Each structure stands twice: as structure tokens, then as C-alpha cells.
Length: 487
Image (cartoon, rainbow, N blue to C red; front, side, top):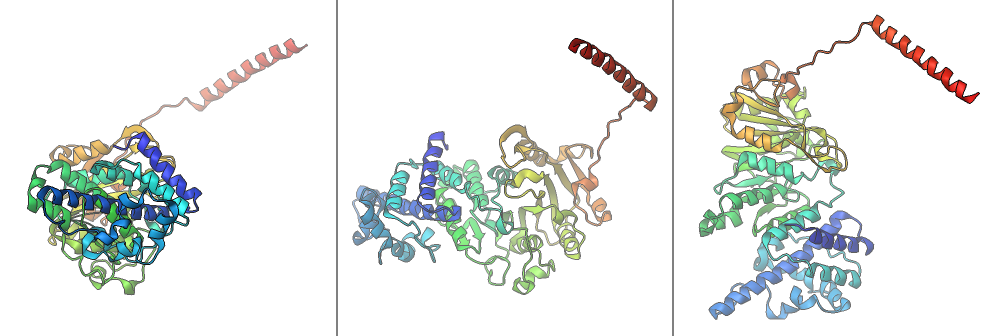
């Protein structure tokens, strides 16, 4: 649990970076990621040493060789600032070790290509290392919560159509699709890997005993979580997020997900959770032809839906956030992707979310699409839910409030038979697929929701005029009384 004291400690580290000359939030997060990873490597080495001492044998696959021991967190954290700074900046120092340690720490080191040490002074490095050493991150939950709190400070999010998805929205989507231990879970626009970490938490909560099995744990650690992200900085941040949530060797790819270079992402995933970028257009020539065969467009929000269909196994399911325009856009490409989901796959649900969900980064209206890849249709009716509140104010402050539809959304979605009797005036309802086809595949909830207008009776104009005249007379009397008091 992230206590107020822990938050305060993290805030002080953040402030130290800012006062020390690093003001770009992504740069701060990246530098802290390196330091947390260095600390994590020392913890892993200590565990290996303890195991070796207990079994009275040599250390198995040591991370640090004896000559590299000065690079261990526990060795340098109490050294003077100048010596510590030299460890990080010299040739064959800390960053060379991180980049070149190869399979000794493959879970994260493979994402260190291009990593740059940017802490400008020995004093700032020593100050931050000292502060991080004092943060108790002994258990996995605390590690994950600390890093999630750090990620919440990325104020530069929202550029280029990329928004950090609120954790409670991710949890809602995960609760709706209910991942299993057999799933291969993917996010093709992984970012900070929020969807993958929350899915991992769900699996741990619901399959705790099953994870004691070595084969199940191996699948969980190595094969279960996949992600693609073209930004190397975000790959490193996302990888650290997963590692601190107890997923040591995620399958992350540094590649443009929509390009032909993304050869790994084809019928691999049984579950996809995503909030793809939905701003701007791409060069059509750079997009994989298989994606264009599904939807001929330059718009990223449409192309990513086609990519998700490409990446899903037959029978695989997806929960994806899309801008409202995807639901009712009139272009040929918009109609093409909606027909694909309805006629050739199984579209199950649409949760319409209020426009404030992504504030303060953007006020765009969005929805969650839930569908299953069948390649043979199967859509018989689509479940709609009109979310009005997500537990937070819909302004830039996003303060916690009592109103929250999310528990109701997950409860109703899991009890589909009960939804059949609901009227179109209710918060949720079912719409037959033929009605959607008759409406040119329009998936906007306003197309199908019925609004009940309350009848109000107003006074006749003559009566209103009489009331105004009466008030004028009363006003005149009071005004004369006031004048009399002033004489």
C-alpha cells in the first residue's frame, strides 16, 4: 500500500531532480528507472548469494563478478558523491555494465540500448541515491505502487495522441475480460505497460495457488505478457514497471507496431488490452499491407484495430479504448472497420465513457470496445453502457467523488441474461445486430438510447404578465417606503 509517508518520500526525490536541473518528467522517470534497476540487481545478487550459502555451493549465474562488486548498490550507496559519480560516468563504469551484462540480467538489460546517464552533478546523484535507499520497497506490491505513483507524474503525457490510461479504467477493462492463467496477454501500444501490470495483478489474485506450479510460473514470467512500443525510453520504463510488479522477463519489442517490421505480432495473443494512439495520420506506405487489407486508412485509431485483429489468435478477445469518432465516422474506412467487427468477428460490448476521463491531458470522448476474433461472424446483439461517472470529477483536477458507475458496469456485463429485459431508457441495454446494420453500422450509443422527457406545465402568458405587474407594484411600494426613510 502506498502510504502518505511513502508518497512524501517520492515527492522529495522528484523535487530534488527538479531543483538539481532536470525538469523534463520523462527524463526524471528514466533516470530513476536506471537507479531502481541497479538497486534491483543488487537485491537479486544478494538472493543468489544467500541461496548459495544455504546450499554450500557456488553462486548460480551471478549478476556481478567479483571485480564488479563496486558497482553494487549496497557498496556504493554510502560512498562520497565524487566517487559515486565517477562510477556512473567513467568508461567501463555503471552504464557500460548495464548495457553489456547481457544474459546475466537479461530481463531488463536488453532494453538498455541507447540509455544515457543524465544526472548532472555528484551532489544530485548522491542525494537521490540516499533518498531511494531510505524508501522501503521490500515487497512486490510496494515496489509496484511506488513506480505507479512515479508514472502518475508524467505531465508531458497527451502529446501525439498518447495518454496514460487511468489505472481504474484499466482495472475495469481487465475485470470485464477476466484474464486466465492460460492467456497470452498483449498490448500493441504498451507505453508504460499499465495494462500488462494490472492484468498480471488480476492473474495473481485469482490464480495464486496455481502459480505455485513451476510450469505455470514459467509461463507467467516469460511468455504471458507481450508488448510493442516504438519509443525506446517507454520500453525501458514499461519493462521496469513490469519487473517491479513481479514480472521479471516480459516479451517487449522495440518496433513500430503498424509496420511490416513487426513480424512477431501475428496470431500470438489470446487477449489484447490497449489504448492505442488516436491522433494524426500515418504515411500509408509505412503500414503493413496485411493491416491495410482490413482497413484502408491513414488514421492510427483504425489501423490499430486492424492490427489487433491480426495479432489475436482465433477465439482471442480484446478490450480496446477508441475515440468516439470510430463509432459513427462516415468515411469509407470507418465503415469498413465497423463492418469487419460486426459481420466477420463477434462484437460484444461498447462502454461509452464521458469526455473527462482523460483530463487534464485531453477532453476527447472515448469508448471501450470488447470483441472476439472469430473470422466467421457471430455478432447477434451488442451490449451498450452509458457511463456517466468513473469515481472522479470530470474536470482538470480529477478529484475523487462518490459517483462511480464502474462496479455497476462490471456487474451488469457479467450477467448478460439479466440485460435482455432492460429498456433503452436504462443505463445499459442490448441492441440486435440487424438494427445496427439498418443504421449503417452506427455504434454511437445516442443512436439507440431512448431519452424520456419529463412533461412540465407552465403558466399562461396572461398569468405571467399579471405576476410581473404584481411584483412591479410591490417593488414601487417598497421603493416609496425607502425614500420616506431618507427624508
